Image (cartoon, rainbow, N blue to C red; front, side, top):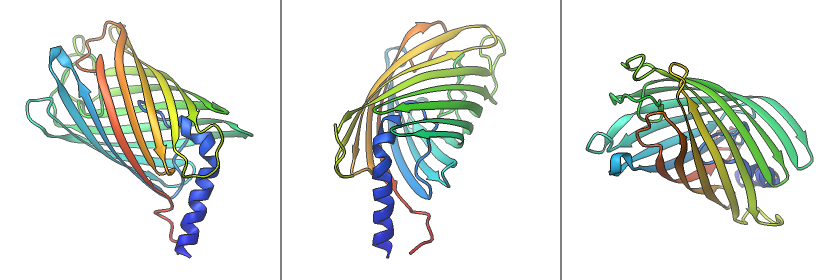
Length: 270
């Protein structure tokens, strides 16, 4: 019975995979959620190049899909930003999907998200990063449109740091916005859920400081492979193309990630 239930869940997920694969953005989250009653585990490594040196951050993350509308992430951060590799802090991210418009081989999603983060770092910059550098909170909206093999997504968010910052030189709030695109390269035709998926992404990531009017814009291309509908591998690079916000490391950053998904892990059915 257990094997039959798990098989039905995987087959159900595979049936929708051609509509979902290209929405698994590398640097942002889509409005769509992971399958209900499922658990995902991610390990991410980010390499940065501040002031000609090299620093890295590793992120351990657990994702839980409670139902079709609600999912959350719990993250832990470690890095050598302050000289030696050490624990930085943690973050809790919650997303609620409030809009779903479905058609054949297309859909439109809308979701609201929030994040609360804690960090031991005493990092001060005009930029605010709640995934390791700063304590604070974030809220925003994301909308995702999928048409056959192309997915487009737009995000707007507000972040506020709770650390000690100087209002003019290091403001404690920032507005972030993004436009993301994803395209399913392979397979051309789905035959079974064991087929690998190859996705190409390009994301534009902007931030504006509402206190002094400064802004910045990054480009972030990425490649993604999905194996057996359960294992995901991301490789991306983020680089700055315009702006005047003081930016400690996001000007040049690579990202490497592996993710494992366990479908129906929370179901009580046997």
